[in-house]
Length: 88
View 1 (spheres, rainbow, N blue to C red):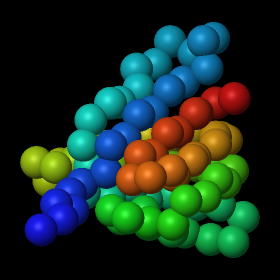
View 2: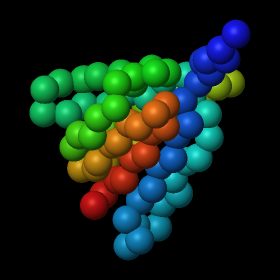
View 3: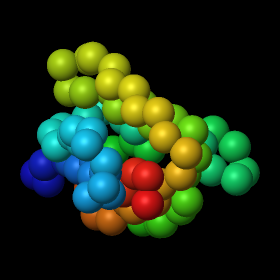
View 4: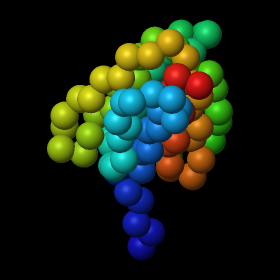
């Protein structure tokens, strides 16, 4: 039997010049917006990288929503891990 996790591993970083705190932990989903519109990342999403704008919402494994506001960032999904770099 193959175990398939129901969560994503998420890491959110701000540029070193920002004095804001990021996030590291498990999430049920991640939502944001790129030049094509709003999108959601769920467990086992396809690998990709995109520029993101305006907002990022992380729905944690304990069902809380954490919202980040920013102008611009980069989001990468690779093998069920999401890395986000904000205000770069």
